[in-house]
Image (cartoon, rainbow, N blue to C red; front, top):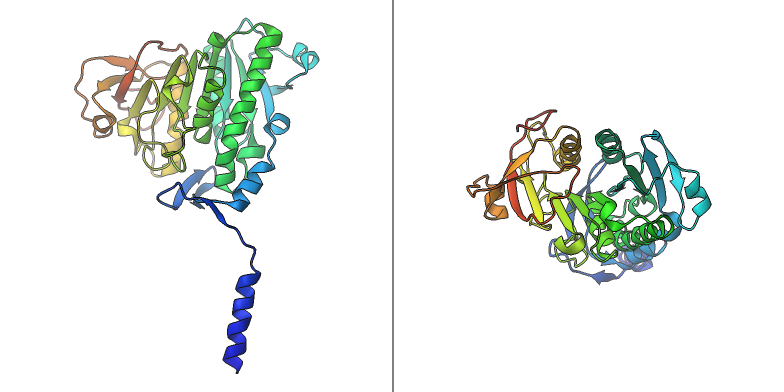
Length: 332
């Protein structure tokens, strides 16, 4: 009798648990490790009703925060607010300068290492407006699928902000460089395509792998006039296959010299971009395919510089290069 009571109590406990139906099974490999700033997280890539509900609570038009850095205010940002021309007028924003827009990744924010490395690098290299988009309200959830779902509306919202900024200042798309890391790498493409592919230069640094292989919103070569991707943990945390006009696979795209973990590999992409801005270097050799790039067996004629300030408009292809284990990373 006691065992029967225990059995029915167990059934009652199970049926009392909240029902969370599966909405989508698009990921073939359901459970994957995904990199956050505090380490790897095992995430469920099948979309559940609770994931959709959490994503629906994010309002990028209201919750995205835009931080302006210039050479006049290189360390303390000035806020920008869509629709507020008066606030814009008391900042150091100058539409005659080129504008760099930085998009962080999952579980990051305005103070992320990505921004801490690239803001000073861009300001050192050129007198530009740097706008850091803090979308931590959408990317900050430990629920990776909710953050992934938030990437699309957040990118659309950033495009709306840029359109407003151009309308009120006379700035034009060919004066922009959009840079995104990890989830922000795909988001950079979403921003660009919502601006009709007219942004002059878009760089995706280690665009995220998990949840994007069958996702039609992933980064695409047509998202900007010139699009470039830097792969440093390809096929693990980062997307493996080519996505841009030009794709670079430093050191084969995985296992960066000087790194002993995937987190370090994943971050190397923005350190390489920063050095390319301030020191140049990083000359890649043309490859027949991403397979030959990853196996470091590139024999085709032709070279191209990775990263840098100026878009390499009209260039295309896959390139491989090698780096040092520590800064300065460039061998060339």
